[in-house]
Each structure stands twice: as structure tokens, then as C-alpha cells.
Image 1: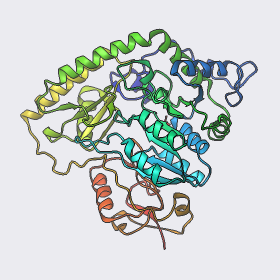
Image 2 (image 1 turned 90 degrees about the vertical axis):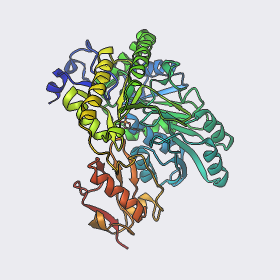
Image 3 (image 1 turned 135 degrees about the vertical axis):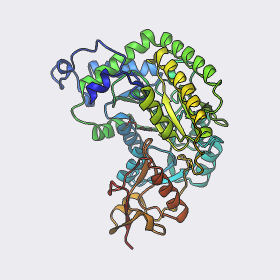
Image 4 (image 1 turned 90 degrees about the horizontal axis):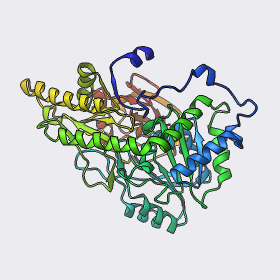
Length: 463
Ligand SMILES: Cc1ncc(COP(=O)(O)O)c(C=O)c1O
């Protein structure tokens, strides 16, 4: 399947950011070694891997950078573990990736949640700094803050203000910048969290830059967090056999950024500007921009067919089947196409031509607007009855999901992608939340996390 997909004519508006455009990497079988003499050890780097990490720190403007081969996932696990004592309190935005919740579970950390604002267009917006200030002022036991910026959709929060607030309260700020590794390399993007003064920043190289899947960086930029703690937890959460293929791809990525980054990002800007200009002429399909956000990364194309009665997954399926365009994500009323410095003008042209064609076809043959095109971004804060770790050790029972109102969950439930929990173990399922979950299931969106992989039954705490 991989070979066929690679040879086919499908244009990737999805991760990884290399967009399968790079050649000349060499025969992977020849390059795949382990820590043989002279090749350094990621967990005790003193040679070529230390040099690679120093080069990354210089390029990304950080004091120190750690190479990750387990994605931002292992970086976030390590960052949370290193910044807080076990059983500590973390102020975090509710739209965090599941890896942050897993860190809470492993370290028995209590979350204090903040809900990001919703944009008028029905996607999650920025996190207001005032909410961070208020929460820190109200709860002096909080020992770190964690914010996702940018979100999957490219929405950025005011990291400089949030960092100042956290520092005024003497606590470090961790930023999950998994989707923003490209920010430091062009002024067309929002400022990077490192340049805004965040203490620990985790970025997936593979999502928006040309590096192999799983590669990421953790930047440590602070005196509030101990380097040895970061190292210790990375040693725990990362494999003891890190792949030299993955690490070599980071080396290639840094070289490409140094040598060709400016030229390629300028070309991306031209392509994006042309695409936005062209698609403004669409009358019923939309390439929309979120309003009321602190900042937004417009290399994420947000496409909506709502006015034609087309859901995000419906639009995405049409683009895949009829035009050979594979998008990154689709849920609710919109679909997301991810662009990188490796995209070619041909891809943008194919996408805008396809959108005009879809609009023409569906206008000839209109379908009724889906009345219940629910917002997949809606997040609530269910009442927390048990901590995640405590819920897991309670006696459980599996009940039909439809009967779960009034129960306490023993499981996570995510909409995937992006892997933000709708429900966390220990949380109370009220009628409104259950109705939302059932509506998502009804729309056949991908719900993950339940041990019953058919999503018919849920494990609950059996009082
Ligand atoms: C916001 C966010 N943070 C972290 C991650 C985890 O990144 P990785 O896939 O590099 O482990 C993801 C993955 O999609 C994500 O969306």
C-alpha cells in the first residue's frame, strides 16, 4: 500500500512536512545503525548528536535543544514530568493533546483547566492571558502552566503575555508548539514560543518541516526548569535504540533550512497569497480565516462546504476520490489542508481548481444543508469526580454508551485527529455531553479511546 501510494498521483496536503519531495537520502538499510563506536549516544550525547542538538539550538534560537525520536508525545511527557513534582497542579488548556493527559495520569498530577475561546467560525480560538492570570492568582499551589499554540487549526495564543504572567507567579510555561516548528524561519508566521520567552517548547519537526515522521525537538530556555530533570525523563520516555535514520533526517532538515529556507518560505508565501486570492472568488465554498484570534498561521488552509450542505468529511472525501487530493483532517463543518515549504505550485493549483469544480457540480445539483452539522471543536469541562489515576483503579463495568448519562468514565474518549479528549477518566458524563458524543458518533467521525473499539460500550466507574 505504501509503495502504491508513493507512486500514485495523490497530492499530499497532510503531514509529514517533507511532502515526499526529498530524494537523495540514501539507502535506508545502509544508514540504519545503532550506537557503534564513534556514533554517539542520544541519552549521553557528547559527539555528533551533541553537535546536531547544538546546531538545532542555534537555528531555533533556544539555549538548549534536545532531539526527540518519539514525536512531541515524548517531549510533552518529559516536559510535564520535569516541570512539576509528582502529584503537583498544572494549569493547562483543555484542548491539550492526549500525551499531556497521559503525563497527568503517570505522575498523578491534578489539572486546573482553562477553556480556549471559540471563534465565530466554530473552531477553537486563543487562550486569553487574563484567564491565566486569574487562575494563578486564585490557586497558589499551581506549579506550571501548559498551553497549546498553535492549535491543529493554526490558532496562536499570546505566548509573550502568558509567559510574563507565569514568570510573575514564579512558575514555568510549557508550550506545545507541535504544529509550529516552522515559525522561527519566516516573519510571515507568528512569533515562535521560544522567542516569546516560554520556558520549555516542544515542536514536531515532522509535522510542518522536512524531517521523518516521529522527529521532534524539546527546547529548554529557562532557569526555572532543571536540565537534568529533562534529561532524566527523556531517558525514561524515549527508546534506548533511537533510529539513526530519524536523526539523520533531522540533520538533513536543518541543512535544508539553513541553505534553502528563506527561498522556499518566500515561494510558499507566493503560493499561499495566490491561493487565497483565487479562492476568494468562490461563492459557496469557502477558504475561511478564523477571526478574533490573537494570531493565526495561514499555512493551514481551512476549507468549508457548509453553504453547499457539505460537511468537512464530505468535502475531504470528494477531494480525495475525484481529484486525488489528500487533506490532513476533516471534522464537523470544515476540512484542513496542511501546507509546508515543500509544497509545489502544482498542488495549490490542483486544490483551487478542484474547489471551483466541486462548487460548480454541487450548485447544479444542490443537496439540503445538513441541519445538524455540529461543531467538532466544542469542548466542555465535565465535573471531575476522581483523578485520572484514581479512576483507573476503581472497579469498572461496561455499559452501552447510550445509557452512560449520570455515570463516571473510566476511559478516555477522543475525536481523532487531533486527539483532544472529550472525556477523561474520572469525569462525570452529563446528558448534554453524552448527546454531543452520540451526535459525533452519528456523523461517523473517528472516536478513539474506548476499549470497545466499535464505540458501542463505555467502561464506567462502578460505584
Ligand atoms: C497539539 C498536538 N500536540 C502534540 C502532538 C503529538 O505530536 P507527535 O505526533 O509528534 O507525537 C499532536 C499530534 O497530533 C498534536 O496535535
